[in-house]
Amino acid sequence: MKAVVLESYALQEGDMHWEALRPLVDTLEIYPLTPPEKIAERLAGAELAILNKCRIGEEVLAACPALRWVGIIATGTDVVDLEACRRHGVLVANVPGYASYSVAQHAFSLLLAVCQCADRYARGVRAGYWKQQPAAYGILPMMELAGKTFGIYGYGDIGRQAARIAQGFGMHVLAATRTVRPEYAADGVEFVDLDTLLACCDVVSLHCPLTPQTKELIDAKRLARIKPGCILINTARGGLVNDAAVADACKSGRLAWYLADAASTEPIPRDNPLLTAENVLITPHISWATDAALRRLEAITAQNLKSYLEGYPEHIVNA
Image 1 (cartoon, rainbow, N blue to C red):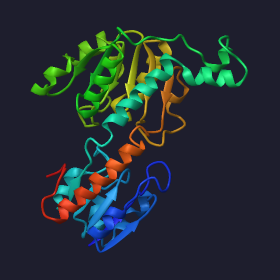
Image 2: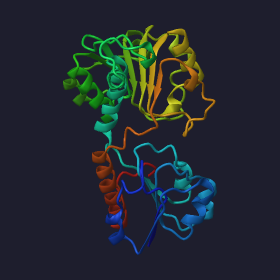
Image 3: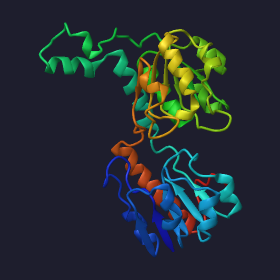
Image 4: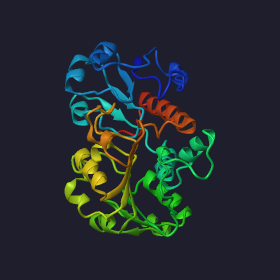
């Protein structure tokens, strides 16, 4: 069998290793990156594909009739047309849970960046200043998190870990989620609907998948209901928010900050209104790429492939 890795690294070449795949297949081709126009060409004759951002849809599937299994090296599945894969008899596996700790940690690294401004003060110290530092460094009023209310939309693995971190800071946690499971009762979290979450929370963090139902979940109408001065965090998918509405809310002060590790289009276009709005902090979708998370990602991807080849496929998202 032939397997093709269309994107072999996360942040820089060499940070992911694919040796565990070699014993499983006859041929393994590895490409650092694959542009859209090369996807079908590189998958020609391959039964197995491994990818992160490369899109697989009807056109690619029609051009690659040998394809039988796609391994997404991520939890989100929006890069693959799952229904088209089902029609073509292609199973799609994802990697759930590998970056739960890392993504939740990143959400709080963004939050602490604006609550304490440690990096800004550190730059001032290197420049020769001490406590009295010029406004040019963007020093902000510091905020204590203890006693504030932290809201979570989407209470899966990442949302639960974010709740634990928030509680560690002494925050009261509210959550809105589609299904409240019995095991959540011990978490010390209050479950509410989305409107209540938006109206009551000092910080709202999004941890749900991007689906037709959640696309632009946070739009102008919902921002009008949000607690004035709220901090909105999005380490899930950029498409969960309406960019223009969030930019306007930041400019008007309705939102104190928008902190994100994703954009509706990636790489983010230079004309995205969020790039010119005040109080917006965006990182380039890297929260999942800690070394520990990458090692888990490799191991689970290899196990997904092994289980498929042995006849009991795991983590299939379009069965």
